Length: 560
Image: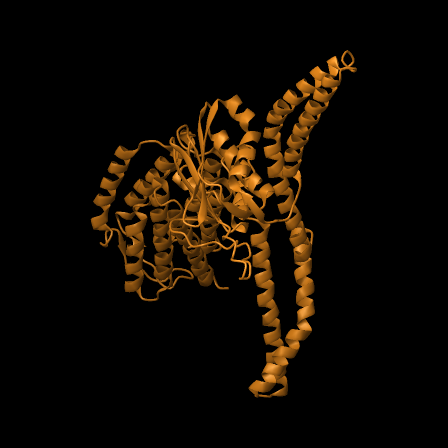
């Protein structure tokens, strides 16, 4: 490459990095003042670099002068924009200083298009033509450099006491801007008639490096409170895409070589040759892809699918165990009462072993209390057992009653009042164990949202062929932004949450042909509404019995 080509390439790279980054930050943080100023500054950097390239590449002195003047009409605002940007990041007020800066910009603007600032010049080194500085160019430079120095000093002098701007972000940003301005300002030497290869144009490559550093600060350190997760899967996808392009490129090149060597022009022969080479190269491509998969993920795609299925099942079990941990205290309380009765009768048994009435009563009560304990333990074990969906006719009121009984001790401990309203005993097709798990997850979320007492309302009502269950609490509620993300896997606002509880609930409800809707407001509580299709009434005996329906009917409103 020639020096002129390096000059052009370095300036194009600046625009190619700065302008997309600025637009992306603006889109991600539309209402952030620092992001808006940064976007304008990035656009200005792009205009500067492209104008500088056009000014130095043109062989026409008039066009070169025009583009140089366009460039300085943008560059003159850089120091003040930089002060705005750093002030917003640091959370400091520098509006008065900025006003003075804009006054100076306005004072210089009328002279930027005059020969007092720049006038036509001749070729300079590898540049075909470039303007030369006028009498006002040096004073402008001194003022401009002074304001840039002041802007950068803000990063050194001030800490981010009232903003999210961290020390790591500051250090990276300061280093990037220093590198960018030191290497970029070498271009000012051209206008003084100074060209010192290889300092020029290679120093200008420091500017795109500086902007890549700024991009790294955004991605890796969350500048502007933008958090981007760059996973191995992204790198893997890019690499596979590159390999695929290269794979088809090799096939095309091989086919073109054969066509040139042999000299055939038939499209049919070309297609056959292309297909043959694709078949020959396919095993090589598959082997390379497997190598890449093992390099990035330590396993093939099939093995990864199996691992993912195992992890999903483990997460489901973890959600059940989380509920079991809370239920344990309530279980201990419920088991304590039957054990007290058993202990009391056992203590009296040696004295009244010959008493037939006592023995009969002892046998009856012992059997009853053991059955109670057995029932409690069986309920607890049901939650930890992995089971496939088994739809059977059941009453939701009984499932709700059993689930609330399991949580009665936890509600008492938290000072939460339970209000129940079951106005329907209709039957649905459901799996009692899975429905119990779904209701348990929802009820636990409601309890955890009410730290210091409250009201938990559970209602069941028939609604035009559906059974509607409403679970409502008086807890802290969910914000609008979080409410839109509650179904996202791994999204959680709890310190020890997995972010999969509601996903599991949604899957269970969908498996039952039902729908689930959340309505919540911060400070006012949350209402969850579930609907399940009723079992159709039995068909007349002369007709074929209707099977249990589990398909979901259409509902109005926002439902999942």
